[in-house]
Each structure stands twice: as structure tokens, then as C-alpha cells.
Length: 94
Image (cartoon, rainbow, N blue to C red):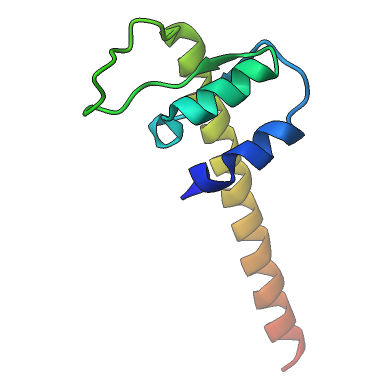
């Protein structure tokens, strides 16, 4: 679980207005840690939470999806490049 190392990750973050995370980071400990760094947490609550999501800025939360897609594309291109290198190496060794 990523949330186990969240406190350490939050300490490494540069100063900012918001920390946007998915439901996997839904805990008051994490929210309080973000607030200690003078940032606002944008973390939706899990379905079984007794507190609602009335305080979430959903427009900001949508940016998390865009960032995740950008990283997925980068990983995809890296995978293609790695496969190409492997094929080239195998071809040259023959």
C-alpha cells in the first residue's frame, strides 16, 4: 500500500497549494500531514466513509487523471524503446 509511505512522500513534496491523491490515500493522518505543510488535501473519501465528499474540488481532482495518463504514456514509450533495444541486441549478436 502506497499510503504506508505517504508521510515520507509528503515531506519530500515542494511547497504547494494542494495535494491531490486518490482514494487509496483516504486517511485523516495523511490529510493532517498535508495541512501541516500549509496545503489543502484533495483526496476523495472511500465509499464506506461516514464523512461525505462535500469538501472535494472535483475540477482540481480531474487533473490527477491527466497526470496519471501522461505517466502511463511515458511508460508505454519506454517499454517500446526497451523492447527495440532488446531486439536490436539479439539481432546483432547473431
